[in-house]
Amino acid sequence: MEVAIRWLKKLSLSQGDKVLLLNAVTGEWWWVEHNGHCGYVPANYLHGACEEEDSDVDDPWQDEEYYGSYKTLKLHLEMLSDQPRTQSYRNVIMQNSQALKGKRILDLGCGTGIISFFCAQLSEPEVVYAVEASDIVEQTRKLVEENGYSRVIQVLGQRAEELQLPTKVDVLVSEWMGTCLLFEFMLESVLLARDLWLKEDGVMWPSTARIHMVPCCADREYSSRVHFWDSPYGLNFSSLKPMAVQEFFSTPKPDYVLKPEDCLSQPCTLLDVNLKTIKIEALERMSSEFQFHVDCDGTFHGLTAWFSVQFQNIDSQEQVDLDTGPFNPLTHWKHTLFMLDQPMQVRTGDKIAGSAVFTRNPIWRRHLSVTITWSITSPSQNTEQNGCKVFPIWR
Ligand SMILES: NC(=[NH2+])NCCC[C@H]1O[C@@H](n2cnc3c(N)ncnc32)[C@H](O)[C@@H]1O
Image 1 (tube, rainbow, N blue to C red):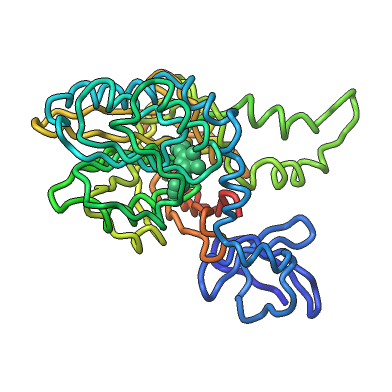
Image 2 (cartoon, rainbow, N blue to C red):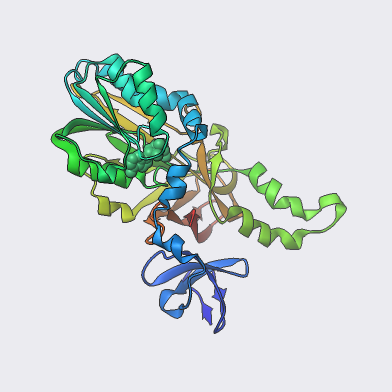
């Protein structure tokens, strides 16, 4: 069965072939892998046992693994060591110290409680509800006691989804941002808590969240993984290159560090989300068009994405901005590199237009895929090149 969708990869399958379901992207088309090749097949062509353990499918949020990763100090050390990240929250609270007096604050996913401590230390809120579902919460309770904040900070060891509070809160603060902003989809828990527990005129911190993207040169990344096979130790291993592209570039690289000099144009903002108004169902699919005007000759290897979040002051129009991009101090999120299979030469004056679609995984609820479609028009070379690639993060 030859299945091909315009500009997407062909995937040749025969009756009875086994495929690995990577992403049931929509009801009609599923993204599968067969013999090292990925592609779309019509969902109604597939049937039979799911490769995954049934028990896995019973836990689409993978909560055991997810909260298990937060019960040790590794990730908390990484987050607390991230100065730009942690200092941004401290600055917001310091700047709003007066406005927070006597207020009720919900810190969702408090971890070690650092944001709750900033609230109790830098202002005089009536109460801070520090909510944490992983087992680290037992340590958090002790830290609150040992630092003398038991009268202000109430530690609640439960999932936000099960939260019961005596009253609504004035401020909902949370550090929920994952790879490419959305991965983990902790944002859904934040929006659920907003809808249940934030006053009508309450404040969301962060207030807005944006995803930015820029076309870039990533020569070292591409050469070290693909050109490497041209002549290792004088031998011709180039027939392995398609396999290398498939193996190393099918998913984005989440810990890439983009240097400003590798940008091929000005970045653009793909998504701009208002966290007070966005509806949970909007998270299922968000799309954006882009148009980059190449401003330097170079090799177009891929597109790098990052996010920024803004914290609106309570009593003024000013805001604090945490931008994790390449023109600001590096954070633990680093940058996310979406590598194309085939690099292309571009020149100043060329245009790279297209779209990015962020589709939440309908089965694995913490995962998404990013479908990038591009078209390069080059007046100087009188050429046009199109392409499309789907990047699962991570299923
Ligand atoms: N920025 C991120 N990517 N992750 C940093 C925050 C994640 C923290 O929030 C906790 N957490 C995540 N979701 C929830 C939830 N629904 N309820 C309570 N705690 C949660 C999680 O256990 C961890 O301690």
